[in-house]
Image (cartoon, rainbow, N blue to C red):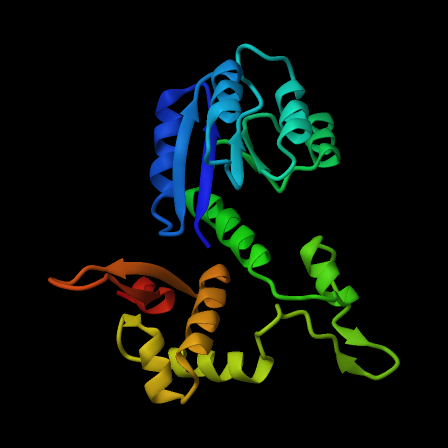
Length: 237
């Protein structure tokens, strides 16, 4: 899934930093940065590339309060909005949540936390459920599931579609004993016996959990190889 991003931030230095951090994710592309509401709305009106995510600062000089957020939600309902703002008061945060933001980040923003937002969005948009269970709905709307079903005395499965607990634990155990800094999908194919698509799906999920970090390695010829840095290995070095 390729993700177009619009940044609305009145400080061009912060906007440039956001752009650099976001585009470290190989599935994200910042298609425009706006310093004002007028520029952002003009861009959205004329562009052929509607953004999947709008990264929005609340304090924009040519609008008041949450006016721009409300207009964006009304006129561009298929763009999800992530707030990146110094505003941390209860009224603003709860009002933004009521309007319908995907996430809310308070400045100064941790770069890994910003990337995690985009990874989580990608994971949610790639779900394949045709019918949703309550457990998966709870996960989507950030409501904790009860760890144990009292009637059956069994654990409730809160993992995303396509992620099996036993396979996940097998892969995590393998990675804990893996001596190299990087692992690829082909490594799991060779060592565990899963298919390449399964290996890639589990590694992407572990990336969301911050157990691994996805990177691209460019060789002399051919397409870049997607590799995953083992965070535990890296922190020990």
